[in-house]
Amino acid sequence: MAKPPKVCFDRILPSEMMKLQQTVPDRPGQVRGISPIGKTWMNGSTLHVRFMGGTPQQKKLVKEQAGWWTEHANLSFVFDDAPTAEIRIAFDENDGAWSYIGTDAKTIPVNQPTMNLGFLDGGTAAHEFGHAIGLAHEHQNPAGGIQWNEQAVIRAMAGAPNFWSEAQTRHNILRKYAANQINGTEFDPKSVMLYFFPAEWTTNGIATSRNEVLSGLDKQFIAGAKMYPKSKPGVTGTVTELKVNPRRRTAASIGTFGEEDLFRFRVDQPGRHVIDTQGSTDVYMKLFGPDSQTALIAEDDDSGIASNARIAADLIEGEYFVQIRHWNRESGKGDYTISVRRTR
Ligand SMILES: [Zn+2]
Image (cartoon, rainbow, N blue to C red; front, side, top):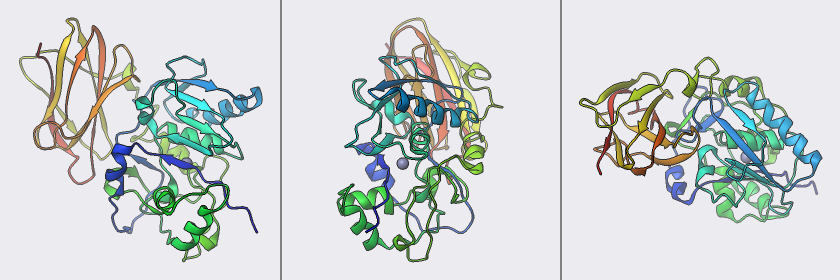
């Protein structure tokens, strides 16, 4: 019997299971590379990487494949084994290959890995780094057009080496992301984020090849306006300055789907600060700092008035960054205002 394919296991935060379980019917129209909204790092970020084990050979391969992304994306990786590194890689052969998606890694205790490379066949490290910078599985693209033979997939994954329950297989392979919850365009059969699977797994004869390098569309997508464009300078360039306790709220607008707005403010007097948006635009907010573009303090979707975002946090002195994205295609465009207030 042919060996079942090695499949990467999505790590999704328990709090998000419900959100991602929404599915929508496949839509005509073409979509490629996908990224759940709200999980990308700030454009221009430097991410530190710590190895938790691994041979020099394994580390070399990992660095090389991580570099495939930074060649195109406005991100950089520093392999300095920093104790607080955002990406922490274990090499446990009994734990398969997986990674948390994008900024989800910030919620994992620093003594635990955010990625495991139990095998390194082909482009596995590139695939897992794709997750680490915010990409989801291409086979879960709602525009994928894959008609799964569900029983065949469930049967195959129930055996060695995965031993997945039906629920795990449904979660990791069969379920698709809701079209309005992701950034993305057409289904890309050559994406490194697509896992190999045989034609018997589908009822419409779609099989995939083993994709071991980034596809042209992977490169385009990661460098695109919705992900990490090098043309957009990110936090080192145009960021709107916010004053704490301003006389007026700052007006802003999200013009196109996937756009992100960046703000910066300085805390001179430590204390509780409230950052919120107002308006009819459904936005998603992330707060980073102090003095860091990648240290995520909090994120919020709807704690404000209606579908506005609101974060209240005790902040020490330093510089903070606020990233605003919209939550979905239908309601995420338009004007809003933002302000930071110190409440005590
Ligand atoms: Zn994967």
